[in-house]
Image 1 (cartoon, rainbow, N blue to C red):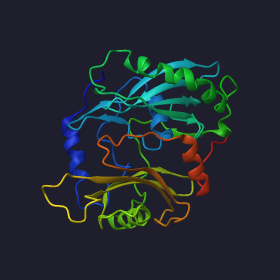
Image 2: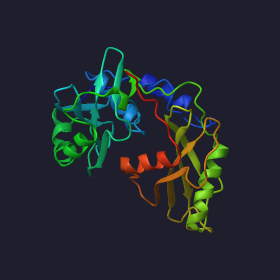
Image 3: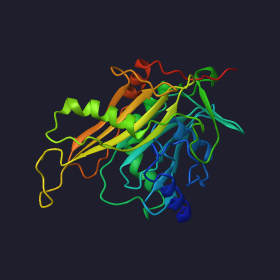
Image 4: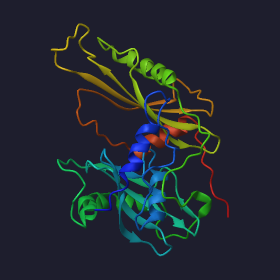
Amino acid sequence: MKKVLSLFFCCVFLFTCSFGFSGCILNRENPFPYRGEYKELYSVAVYSIPDAEGYMDHGEGAYNSDIYVWEQDDYGRILFSYCEDYSNQIFGLVISQAYDENNVYFYPDINYALTFIDSEYAYEGREEDHLKNRTEDFYLENKEKLKEANDWNKPIDKNKCISYPITDHKVLGKKTYSLSSVECNRILNEYSETLNLPNPDKTPHRYNHVLQVDAEGKILHQIYGDHHHYDNPNWSKTDEYTSYDITLWVITDKDGNYDKENGVFVMYSNANDTKKTYVYNPEDILEFKNKNNWKHSYCEE
């Protein structure tokens, strides 16, 4: 496994994200910068996969995200596996179109696939080829579809690409709007009303992140909330603890306004699930973005 990153920075991060702020936004300075050998591919992964954070958090610190290169085509495209999940369950397959001294290039929203592989042990301490062995079947099953969508072995067309600077942590802009706790509670409660819970929490919001920003300043947010004792209005301390967990993705404009009909995507909604682990289909995210007129800033030759 990769070298453990600084525990000191973990403490700084937890302090920064303490209660009283509107939420930990992902354009913060990453306390766990990438120190691996594939900085270009790391940059592609964290800007391609919307909820990628860029490090493998184990609660008291972090490891580098893990990367395994499967193959490269005649024009320099690279197909690789990516993992930042310490629980050893969520894995990605990603294609990079190209990179130069400063930037990486990729096709947005169609250059990655995700999978959930059940596991009872953490990523830490696995064998050297763990990522390869863990994702080989996923790679074999998905590589051809991913290659076709990303013009594998065709001349590079940067006009179909978006670009980001090569980085050791995910940066989305210091002035990106982050939803307040009041706004998050309102959005969560609007959705929760559709569930008809016997005992909903008035303030279910727990935390929120900014995931991505488009060319016009629209923002993709992730909001997490839960309802304690959701099914027991008369609960007491001796009763079994129950909770209903919700993760919503919301697209707003640069001022936090959103389309109530099309601007909310229910990513996760479930009761009494201790793992709370899920993956999503990139095609669903692309459709969600299209409904909200998401605009990418494509490269120009």
